[in-house]
Length: 361
Image 1 (tube, one colour):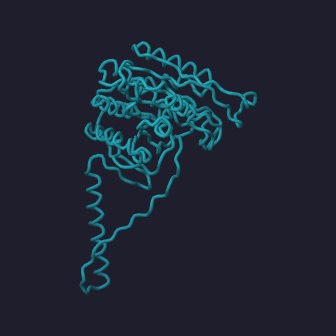
Image 2 (cartoon, rainbow, N blue to C red):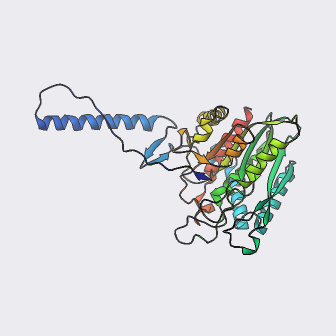
Image 3 (cartoon, one colour):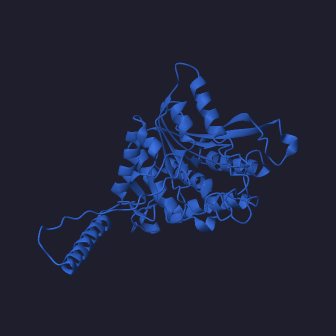
């Protein structure tokens, strides 16, 4: 995924009224200082006392600290975190690799053991011309989206999704941009949350059918500016080409991407808010978070739009879609994106919000 731009935050300014009295210069200075200080303190008091409000520090969007503890949340964040470690123990899971095949086998067994229907949507994608395997240049690489169906007979369906490939190399790493990259938060954490959500869907099935979709080839690139979103674009194209009239249409699609980091903050993604058909989805999810007291879901737009898998789902497949993403994650596309920098509590909060939102569908 990538951002369209990263604007700078304008310097704050404040205007305060002054009384029309003839005062000395020193007195005016003192009164002005008191007035400005009082105004600033009052503003800060309002900001910090309002639940869930976001605020800027040095241009960084932050969420209010949530008092929830892991044991307060009826979504097993500890088990989700264990799933994350299992995925990362496989190693880098780039598209077309043996490690990706191992991950696919692990996930298929996990969901089939839960009684879900698992299918692989296989496709070919051109190997990038700047890739390290010169023998593959000019050839196609096999890839596969993974689709997990819960309650497949239900024609009213919701999709929760995320990519399950890892970036081939940590391109933004300051020391070794060609070193190993296990992609814990990007996007092992999103996959692990959906694994645990599968357990909950069996235990407490919602009224709608649910598909969990894992996209391949989201970032099979070897330099910035490469071709992203191969799997989601293929999925959207196949969805459009399906037989008419369709057996079903997705009511909504919710994308998880970088949602397991510590110090989590999830503002409303601006593209999702711009789309008239998707804005109600955003408001539903963030309202659910507010009702549960999960303040990491920040009820205001993020700094800038995000290019991610939800674009193909919305623009090509015409599915109302939104993106849950923390694009201020410190270790994005570096070797530091490891389980140690992820949080079972963050995973529990995100999973709980989605679990409760599904109950309302």
